[in-house]
Image (cartoon, rainbow, N blue to C red; front, side, top):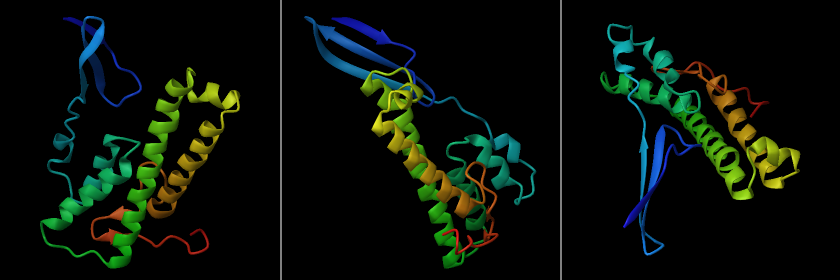
Length: 174
């Protein structure tokens, strides 16, 4: 049996590789390894005021900063059993959904689509008039807009705080 290793595996978060096990010229097995290094953010929050923690923790990742901020707030609210008003909960959920849309579009249209379409990057596809790339970036921008409305900005949101949210999105913007 022969093993072919593809390393590094690009266009993924973290460090990745693929091992293909070949037997008689055919693929007999595949192993995908994706490893994300520890970021050790826990040490940054030791001794900090609880109201500083969400802003620090959301810097773990710019792409998923909203989910990190919401998770930090939820963890801090769980200890003293703080109840979140339903409206604030809905705004947080909206922030998370916008983040999911943006993140999935980034992955599918900016990282995967160029490989499927034989392009070097999404920019090459856009220059060639690829409709999937164009529509994918429009959808990605929509996810960012949702994050801006619910989180105050698309990256490193500021609207979600321990105890709820600071403000409702403007009705006209919604």
